[in-house]
Length: 355
Ligand SMILES: [Zn+2]
Image (cartoon, rainbow, N blue to C red; front, side, top):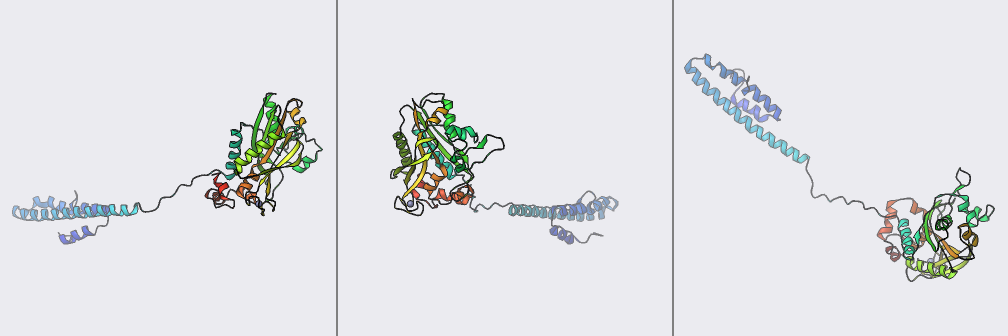
């Protein structure tokens, strides 16, 4: 070819084409509609017949070899690109799968549900009340007058609206439940819920959970109280647990008693958690004060009752053998997970009974 080099040169250009686009350009340049070989074939008619035949055969041979080289290189390039894509998008089937994180109930939720479960089986029903409570329900109705020292003891959070307080205990639900029963008997409720006090140290947090209990009926006595709470302690801590009741004072019960259970950590032998006594206090309780029954709409000359209140955190501390309650509220999943795996500080069988 006049300006094109040899057939060998064209074939080399084709073999060196790096992309399909480059190849397309070469094709157009030589064998396309205006390609150099094509153009020369158009010139053939102007040649003398002998020369035309010879030249025509030559051009045809060139055209065939160029087309064949183009097809070969095209196949190679398609193959190359497929392999490049495979490497790029390759799936490594040997990589271990990512295990999905399974959510768990918070230890305090599990303890609360366990307590609820025990009382529901004893025939109690669940009751609830507002967390922003009137001072009347939170204090006066429970026999705690404005100048009563218990109000100082409890160090409440007050709301900007006069007469309202963040409830300092779940005891207002006692009054609300009696009112809701409108004199019907028996009243037999537990009231789990959040409560608020201005406390913040290793064993107190400003927001904590209580479970209140109230039974009102004819002929209810202190013996019903100790019987019910002992059953609860056995269900919660296991058959081996011992209970004892110590005389105490609360404005809304008379007489008032606190219940101790044998220490879960040392089983009564004495240790740091129980201050070497072998016992830990878990709740306050008593026979419902006549003033409280009246405020709930019941006649204390006809009915009697018992009530109790326990801190879920405190019970969880006993169960899990914790000495810093605040860890439970930091929501560090790594710490909370130890309650599930049995790596916590507490005795394993207590924990596994709550799993
Ligand atoms: Zn102990």
